[in-house]
Image (cartoon, rainbow, N blue to C red; front, side, top):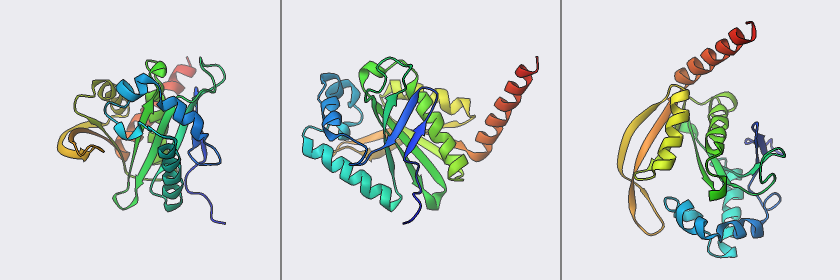
Length: 213
């Protein structure tokens, strides 16, 4: 049996990420999450492909996630708060890691139920995905996009991109297609390996200096 390329489980200080698969993911739980009125409106306003209007769509999503995992093109994960957090163990949303091997780049996306907004989970998750890009997979660039008009995501992305010394590259017009056929403009953000290494080195040096005081 071949060694899995993607980690099946990841953790941060407050979150646990588990691989989306039929062994790890309860499709009824994910379906119930998606039936909330806020999920069908505000949460998926800019990500309508996660609306999951039927159980069959959830099952197909998990089928696709297993195929993508095997093909090494996508790693999809559920997100749950750890034991010390409010709503500990509850399904909070979904995230992904997408490598583009030939371009030596990696990217990530996230969708969270509304009651988990405002806790900093999106940023904490992103920092882990940036780490995966450079530390585990030895890639040279992390990138992500946010739809024009998605101000909440743009603010969240800007914070962590800037913390790693990255860049808002600008607006890509007519860049991404939605299930309805609508084509959207997307803001693109990047962190290069040089920026990441500089930011993490400076952060480590500052922590060491603080510890010696």
